[in-house]
Length: 326
Image 1 (cartoon, rainbow, N blue to C red):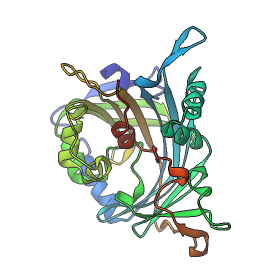
Image 2: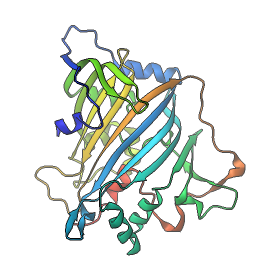
Image 3: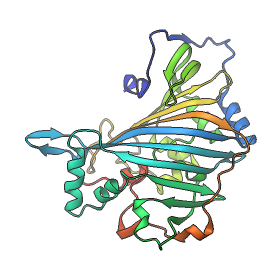
Image 4: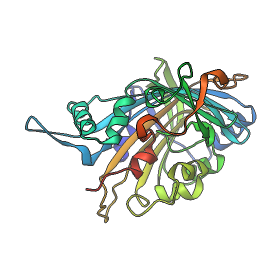
């Protein structure tokens, strides 16, 4: 598992040198760095991508067994404030890259599976904006139920700037970040080029922290995760682990944050299908004085849920809650 998360989406170059942090080294303090970013009300440009696998949906197609997974990409802006993430403006799109997965999704949707219909709708671009605590969405999941000329659905109040769906660990909660950093299995300074970011830039000379915690641990410490989970994790996934990997610059400012999660864990047979996934969040730019603005009121209509009774099925915790029986 460690080797898997170490390699998620990272183009590691041959010149990388891993240097263990000696006790006396002046390593940066990511918690202090995050607190500075919050106090300065900075806005982060993010690019996020990853994959989710649903074990119960795989099947044979033309005598060949196919796993079922989907990929996602989100990009846009996160607005920070003294209390954490207070706003966001993000686009998101799903992709079926593995052979056979699109056919499986279409077959399930034709059979009346609402989750599959939602996933297919999400292959078109969606956009979400959270400003002043109010959450707005636009895209195919909502457009059929909105009045003409009003492409934005007002969804209600949002937690943590509406920024956490595919990424379930909020590193802009200082207490949560402190909990992560208090229990790591590796701390390194990486000299030289480390990875090529989505903008094609070489990220160099970074500090790396790696660790893990359970879904139960995350629920205990993180208000963002508690809001996503809705209820305390049950035995079908609570003791399962979330592996994480944080890269920062020399000032402790986050550059990349990876997670990898799996609902399966040793010694437990779940009556629900297995789900697993990974998310990489790259922080590719920082701005000051760039607040997120809501859509104009003349373009908005209240719509708390997607059209046609479809589930949103657009965040990790909804996927976990919605797992089908084995």
